[in-house]
Length: 336
Image 1 (cartoon, rainbow, N blue to C red):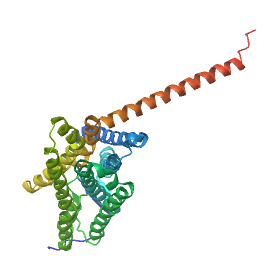
Image 2 (cartoon, helix red, strand yellow; image 1 turned 180 degrees about the vertical axis):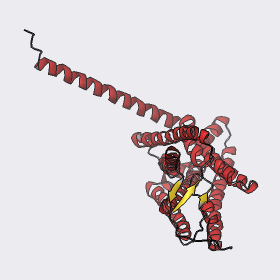
Image 3 (cartoon, rainbow, N blue to C red; image 1 turned 60 degrees about the vertical axis):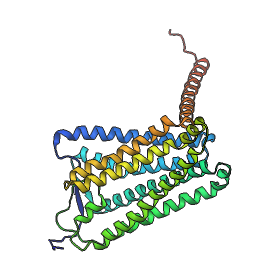
Image 4 (cartoon, rainbow, N blue to C red; image 1 turned 60 degrees about the horizontal axis):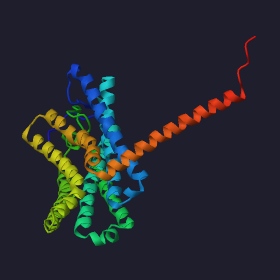
């Protein structure tokens, strides 16, 4: 690689989605709205599952963790972008860039593994319904979650440590709205062969294999559903995995779309715009998919909102009673 001027790296420049000043207020309000919807929607899913004892099952246990992962996933990139737009600054420190890369890869990988585990959960529920609670016992569910966390942590930590060993040149502009691994590696002046090799191997083991597992699970699910004689039974069996299948299609569909757009276009800014779909839009739509398609979640959300409204009314009544009692004990003195 051609050696250019090398200096100790203290910060990078995030060029963002657009450099046009007129678009910055629009981008600020657009991404702020999407972030708040994604954050509040996934938080409501978590609260509904925690508060409703009927949802304390393996399927919703993994869904709550997926919602938590989505909250963290969007929080690694969007708040920094909003801050840069608001302050009209494009700077991110070297340590901040490495931290952002680490947490972005961590929660992206965790999403990937959780979707795979949820596909296996639906496979057991439909293909082995009589043994479902025996196979998907609480201990096994916790082991699956722990393995998902460990693999995600180790993978993101490996990539982050390898990037920290690179030396960078004076040109430190990243044509993206966050520190994306490939974009940062392209700025390095030192040899990046080991980094590229780690990316290819990691993509094969931690992306392709889980996707193969999802395809295998759903192929067995489809075969089992086709064996059901009644159309009502087929619909009921498919409805139990319809929401998850929609999220899988959205997650991997947008990821493949970003990959194809980056391969077809040499413009890095186009890739950055395409990345918005899986970094912001997908986590924002997940609560709507489960909230609109899942009857249990809709009922739990309705009960949660009703309890909150009832609690608010009780607090108002309590305050009113306190005021009445205070007035009764301390009546106003008549004016002279």
